[in-house]
Length: 325
Image (cartoon, rainbow, N blue to C red):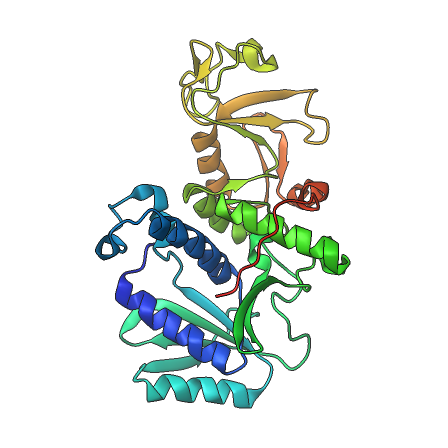
């Protein structure tokens, strides 16, 4: 996610969303994830009977801060040019001053739309007559697989069957279970990495910095004050971080968030060591590659994340949920 939007920017963004859906467009990606998260925490806010005039005050009731929309990029797919034309006309009729340019640097976007009065908003428009359903067989995070479109005059958010994951081929009943579990994880700001490119490293750690927990990193993460007394990590209780050289533990508890790096992620009980997670993140961002070496020359390969997804977990039957706007 990105920075918190103000109320006016959000109104413009939802107006564009409305015009896109009315023009038979499909919205997908992290914008839809943000809508699910916002809807959930908005309901909590309203159910607590908190003051409406404080809703957009980010300093008020931080426990429900996700009620304030936090994503300024909207991706829309149109399968017919005339639907795009309808969308464009609706924007102009409602005095949304827009400029369109071809995005030559982004293979997945045909057009980029900017709002003159709100330059912080970014609209990606894709025109596709073939393979029409986003996200076009590729997601960075499992939570990115949701699409938003109109069905029988209702706006529906549902999981795509074109994510590139094994979920695409599940029978309807199991597929719905997976969808519900991914939604439940979004409400807890949890997800898994699927396919990463080098340029996604920065996105991944921005996501983590925003409070998201990633279940399948190629190393383990433990919280600050994690007690190692009754764990195998006790043998490292006097260790210093190999990057900053500061103590990792004090009184058998981690002094900050902790990462454990393994020589073989598929056989983690062999050789491993602890390190400050923040220091390790700085190292990863400096390398800016999904394939790198840690300070002790163990290989860190983010391509392994895909292989470490616990698919059985997502297929566990849980409380049924449905999200209709």
